[in-house]
Length: 331
Image (cartoon, rainbow, N blue to C red; front, side):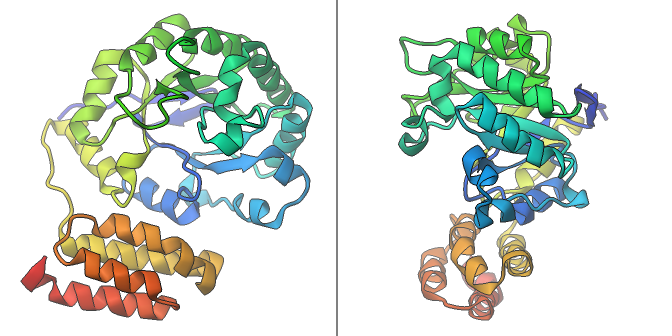
């Protein structure tokens, strides 16, 4: 059996290269805890608005609930003003996260129109100023950056931006191999990840089109990156971390989870959400998670329809348990 070398971001040691990507509306505490249980080495919160945090927005503050069971954990902030980002980072510092991450990769129009997220790829000087401001108040907590390949095919500048933010103090960079204009279409360019890795002297995390254990090893080998960040490939599929870790250690591809394991995990995830957020919010937020867990199972569309009109967690559990009981016949 092979061994997997540990690596570090600043003073934070990571036991394997597997990283859960920050995803808005997805990577809340229960999702992060499950990913860590499955072997993921580092998890990220949903992206947190600097202004919403500074202004004391209740929902934003709730998104910052951390647990010792998920560490190491990175809190991701987004914004476009160095001063506001520094103030938000000062507040986050009091929560003692393992890493503070700065979002320079979100492609959604409502974010980029404010000069935030991937819009910062067009302003390397401002990107560097934000990193410098956050590093200045982080109190020794490593500050990292998640970015994209560039703004569009005419502005492929991940190497330039990476150099700028590392010079400003970033302890690592994560690179998604698509431009902002691509959103999530087309293929991720892993070549740009390799280019960034060659250009900077800090750890580089690759991101984009990692859906199977073999993709993890291939990205490591083709790009030389230190970490592999998995986003959409982990939706309803936390087993990708366990299976990828096993594959890296043994070269053996474990089978994916069976229907029963997927349904039971959906029920457990729902109960974790209820404990954290209360029944009403859990019911609303778990609809998409349950759809992801059940994707591809025979009879799942009928179950999804029932889940989407369920009004209580108990009703959802009953629907899922009934589906579980019938799975020997239809799944």
